[in-house]
Image 1 (cartoon, rainbow, N blue to C red):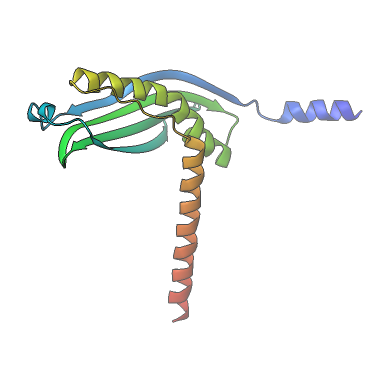
Image 2 (cartoon, one colour; image 1 turned 180 degrees about the horizontal axis):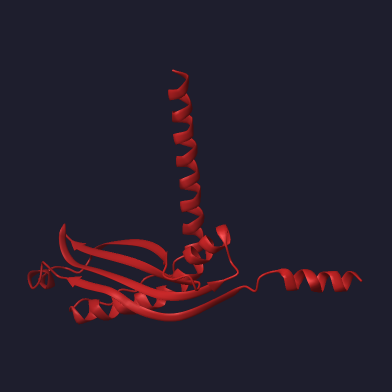
Length: 169
């Protein structure tokens, strides 16, 4: 009897599905404003890497577009050697996952899938620009997601405290 109830409860739960539909480069730009003079300098760049993700529901059938944007700036002696930005995107079908779990999938699983494609695009365009390869280290998107969640909660509680003070004055 208990087994029947468990089977019925499982049937009542919505089936969770997560499928990659398509991966594509949405935007790719490369600038080398200091060339050709930059090639004469000792190659010991200061490299800055910025990551950003965004997601949008693109239809009512459960399809979402997730865009991972990576911007890399390499400078030598305060002169920009190169600036590369890639927007690596994907369309993902997600069904039976809602609320916080959906946000987590869009903010962690999808960027994890997109990252190797973005890394490959960046490496290829930098080498074609005449520079040594850029080997981006793996990214912990789960950690970044948790950090962003904590910052949002801290900001919300700080704003709530400020709002509370304003109401008492």
